Image (cartoon, rainbow over all chains, first blue to last red; front, side):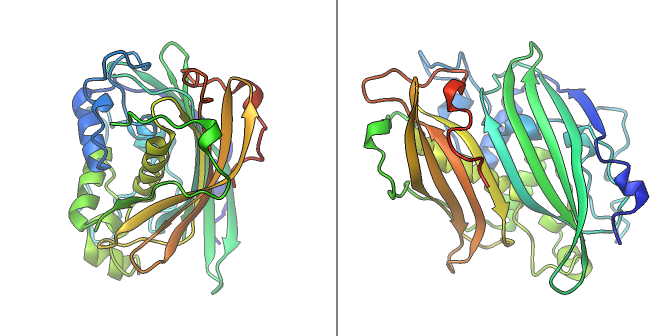
Length: 169
Length: 167
């Protein structure tokens, strides 16, 4: 069983985090990694309706970074069982106490309202909305985790609502 | 790059959106995405770990990278005057390094919603062996042919609840 009382206590836990300003270089690397080199992600386009260069739609959900001085996630990378898995930086939420259980994506829902512009900071509110267990076809326990996030500018303008579902096994 | 303009009146239920092809997506592409997002999960770049420790058949293409491709496909179709409002997907199967992914979408329904139109689509993603790995839906708002661009930032207004929520 993966859904222990200790894990169940995370349901409803939420956190708010504020990003560093959207960086031109980070947006460039992101756009190149998704192979979408649209000029509006670099310089903007004259007369465009976005008010300047912007980041790709889902960038706010993946822009949160580990601050200097916090524990290095690669400190244990020499451990053969180290999986490199952490959602703590990107969501602001504590990782579930499930070390050693594999993770894959199960689903995602996005509602998109506005692009983040270069130089804007983004405020994230995230929460463990649900954690539940199911059984695989071969009887293996699967733990589903639903994280809900909302991303706004520092001035409170809504950018994106995002729901991501993971499965641990 | 998206200079074309889609109009609500031109959208026909049953029509296919132009497909978007990505790949072959090699371990280098996965490494680039991991680095861009500071995602250190080893199943995306450490082949022995993925296969021997996590019992996967190879290096996994990130789910959040596949989601970027879905948005990209729909944004290109919606054009400069439209808006991709909602996307919902289930990751039904894994995709492995080496695969070429084709993102597709088909118009399922359309209706007027005040200042702009609304189009519901079914979306999916298949590899070069026709294996589907994503099942989902989307709602896109194109402008009317004689109207201006969809308001920005997007304000759904009367559009809320126009279609049942994406799966």
